[in-house]
Length: 346
Ligand code: FAD
Image (cartoon, rainbow, N blue to C red; front, top):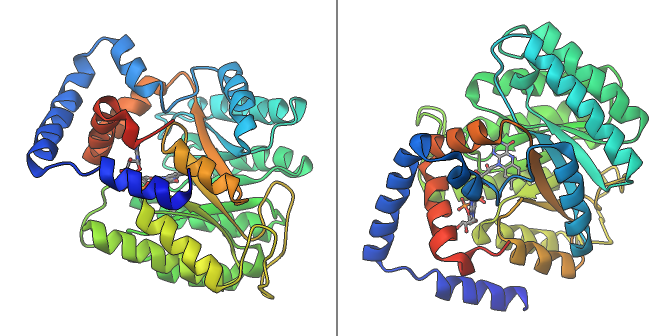
């Protein structure tokens, strides 16, 4: 199916009447309320779509399976905001195993770290040391490391770590910026000023519902702000990983790429670094595991580099429930996926 047809069919299928939508929102809220008391197997069934499994083997076999779809991966070990620093050792060791498996199986993958899982909110210096351990091993094997962006308490600290690591000579690190935050445009400018052609961003709307003093809260404003960030990133010569499943963002990005004459095999920008191992030429599209696979496959069939974010880990239950409770939009997506599966193909 062509992208235009897929989009048309998505719109037609998504034409949910206001009363049906209201009903589904209520159902979504009901599901969210029930989750903490629901038997684990039910939550597993819902979360199963979005999580590769509870161990690294499941993630590896899933990636080998999806590999046929002409995509690459980012691996994420589930878990965040630890309560004591001993817990951080688990993440250091597990990510080290992840790197071993990427190398052993020659998987086209990089990794994403959540700084709070390494102790950022407990002891910044120890957290940096922990992440540096992973970064060194990844750098020696030419593997890229992205710091996921968490809520506003750690935005500046996360950016500072990326800048510090680049200062220490690591070129295999980048972070994520969230279009919904007012500060993001300024952050792009500051980061690109410091890192120049080594600036490497993932841009997304932002999953955390931030206060309206610091972020946009209306859908249209979030989309516009995110699209504006994509433009600034692309124009600045930065590597730009567009992480969204939303047509207004994908369409905008495709149009912008075309205007800049950036194609899967051509990046005419003179201020960019050019192609690097494991990356596309200047940009890529990123998708969460289990979300809008049809759109991802369509983009891949047109030659665009696509990447699937693959979370796994023993903490899948806490992660799933917490995420769903944090952002009611996810409950809406889950309800839609459960009852209208055609709107979201795996
Ligand atoms: P939406 O309007 O939310 O979604 C568009 C359509 O996609 C929906 O109608 C639905 O069909 C489908 N969809 C989207 N999300 C889901 C879902 N969870 N379940 C089922 N269907 C869904 N946020 C951060 O704050 N920090 C990060 O580091 C971060 N990393 C990310 C990495 C990747 C690869 C991706 C894709 C997202 C990441 N996000 C991150 C989340 C992001 O900020 C958004 O919250 C999320 O992608 C939903 O926004 P959307 O642009 O896809 O648009």
